[in-house]
Image 1 (spheres, helix red, strand yellow):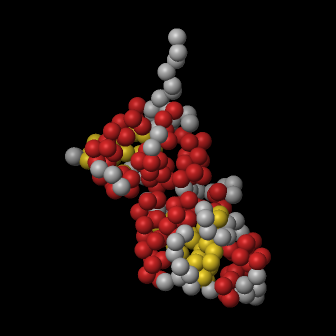
Image 2 (spheres, helix red, strand yellow):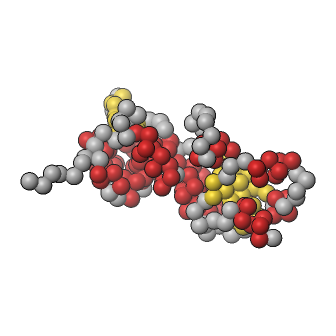
Image 3 (cartoon, helix red, strand yellow):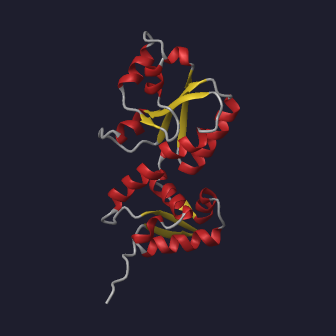
Length: 201
């Protein structure tokens, strides 16, 4: 007799499921079904069905407050930590920010730095409350603000952006740049890394 697939097997069954996991596992908080629907760019009915599937698999938990159903990652699940790591790697800030910045003119390089990059590199410490983004180039500030705002909504975390001109990034005597160069950085998907740009010049 053929055994059914484990309940957790369809975790990445669709774009919507991936979006929900990215919000609850990376945002690391409680979110209403309406919030999750907005993050997944779908309707609340579809979102509610996905939430029920993930609850059945033990991936998320929920509670009802008033008329709102609040959803969060199930931290007591035996697979919570490896699943969270997988979600961060595959659906996390580097991928989301890369998607939002890839078509932005004036961006010659970008990367995540600071606490999030340090944790991704294996340094011990508390989970970062926000994400530090380094952008090298001369992008339109309004376009950059909109792109980062979209990423912030998708990730459920604040994104602090530092924009440096290529000349300043290549200024070896700048103490801030010297510190950045020796600290961990996480490259964005489809965007050149700052260190790659420096090496090419």
